Image (cartoon, rainbow, N blue to C red):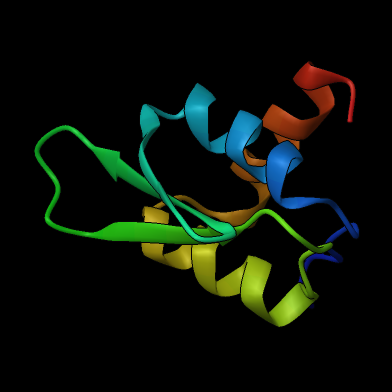
Length: 79
């Protein structure tokens, strides 16, 4: 059964992805573009809205982590 994702803001997602080694490379309009050292993939996280579950699931997949790990980082951050 798929893991249930919480509704979080883009800023909260950035904090969680930072725990995995991603960092904000630049701000492009209302999106933060995140990079990870040694990876050609970028994550574009909207800052102006709460993330829908489908988008959050895609960002987690693109980051190369599983949902349980992401949820663990959210719990550590107290989100």
